[in-house]
Image (cartoon, each protein chain N blue to C red):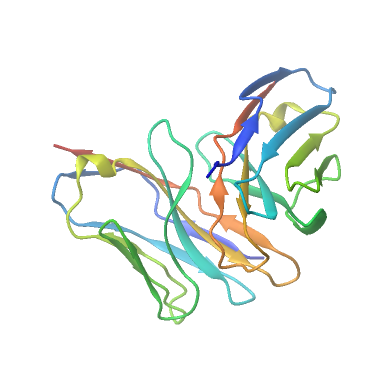
Length: 113
Length: 114
């Protein structure tokens, strides 16, 4: 069945460091891919998305490119801030055989000043 | 614009009991999805409702059931509660059936089964 695998955390970085959180997926159809973020004390919210191969999603300095050949959707940011500390979830949504969304286990990011 | 709301925020039940959780969609949204999030894990898809019909279901037993009402609000019902049902239950609303639609999440209901 469909699945999402993302790198385990926690990830601890210093402010202004480069961030990569790896995400790979398996899917039988042609899914849309998402990164959701959960800031401390807040609910899940969309960070960015890409709906077809080679699309790049971007928001708040974060980027991810939908790579069909490597079945990946890695999240990157060139310079993290303390305010980026949160849990990041990679997810796919697919309508094949009825709608479903699959989330990864989440990666907790700590950014130190 | 009103966001997604859920009630109650917290709930304690005992094994074998039944529970009903409620969700109000964001204004203008006609699709609701429900998720179970265990501590330290990602959300797991339970099912989705579109215009009062179930549109997709994850790997959850039939004792997990739902309803969507004409105003697009929704209920999640869980019968014969088990200890493993203790989790945060999230609902999310969106517009339409397309897989690329953004889902807007509520704050969740935390259920503890003793």
